[in-house]
Length: 131
Image (tube, rainbow, N blue to C red; front, top):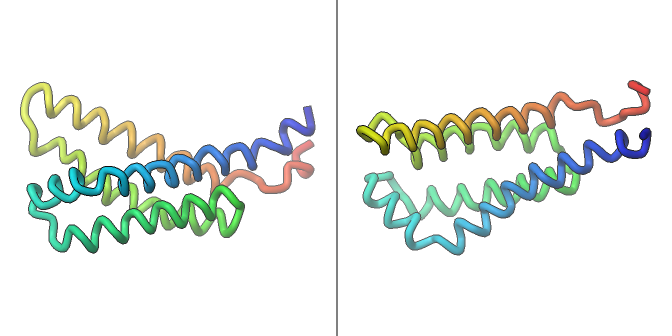
């Protein structure tokens, strides 16, 4: 049981970091549709914004996976998540069923992702102290 408890931080780092790395590559693959959506939403400097966003989430995702400055990486990903969600799922701009769908996606991404990142910041890195 101790070995399992000791491996939990590494498993959390892997899963949470992989989430950001995966979607960084996903966004590169879907560059053109994302760029068109950002142009349609009249986002200022969409090329720069999308490039920095992809780099941001990929680099800090890898840092979390490999345990490099995990707390700082997690904290720096929180503003990224908030900005990305506000841009991609502005539920207040929609009506009817689309508003409900975007609100659900907005709330789910916001609460689960930020909770996971905050958990990385607060989870003890040395579990020997709790056993």
